[in-house]
Length: 362
Ligand SMILES: Nc1ncnc2c1ncn2[C@@H]1O[C@H](COP(=O)(O)OP(=O)(O)OP(=O)(O)O)[C@@H](O)[C@H]1O
Ligand SMILES: [Mg+2]
Image (cartoon, rainbow, N blue to C red; front, side):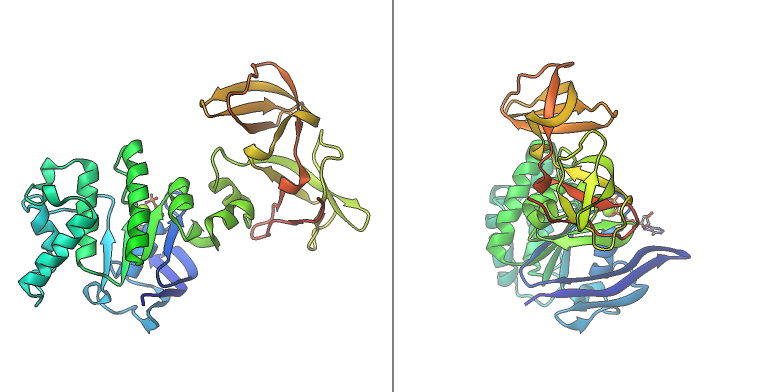
């Protein structure tokens, strides 16, 4: 078992607080991804878990035991960094065994663990090489191998793939997911890449300015973002946003967006007042092109081969991107009709901390 809990964890550097009371449970065998923009506190949180950074307030529990003051070596966690941190003068084999050799572990056990990790990561032919004779992806495998040989309770990864080129990142992402499935280990993975978060995570934790914005399974975050920040952070191309107002409608509330008279369904006001300014969000794949009551002009059609991103300008000056399958034959300047199906629209309130409004209509 390897579970972890953060209870109202705070981190301050001098007078500046960078983590403002984060609470979170990581269950045994989960791969939890911390994601968020640069400076939001991902690494700081991970370093506090590892014991590399003191915890200013709150509790860190590993398997139910408070570990705030347990030194890093006794937490039995392994961390893999962006900058592999391999020992340049040691062979791959020595790098993998490092950390085990100054324990009481018998030689045969060390050799077995090094052999198992090398096999798992397919680096057996490289065992006698020095790190400088390895490619970036091979070095990253050795860094991961060094974590595996320690058989830690929890693996901690801080942007381990960000030094690799795009193709290798995708390959290593798949390999890491497979490794997680095979080891069944508890892992915490930090990235600012929302695609890595979406594809690898059991659950995603979205952070912003040292606070948790939302925690959930990848598709829950994608389909039901708690607020505009999460909606914008998860998904590529980015969710479309249009400014609107709430208008009274029968017993409920309706969203009114200029140029979009009756396209939108009622929403559950949840205490919102009529005339409150809101932002309407719709993902590019949900914008219907070629029918509907919204007039627009094509500004640009980006062809990716398997799909097209159609950038549209509305008469109000607002812009929308539609994502169409295949190779859309639309040209710059062409007039198009758009529809924004109500069931796919999110309604975000402006006030800080206000949740997205639930949709009532079809
Ligand atoms: N030793 C330190 N002293 C003072 N401030 C620090 C220290 N380490 C981090 N910070 C600040 O804490 C905040 C969070 O930093 P952190 O490195 O955790 O961000 P991050 O989410 O990992 O960002 P990135 O994606 O760029 O790696 C930042 O504002 C950073 O400047
Ligand atoms: Mg970082």
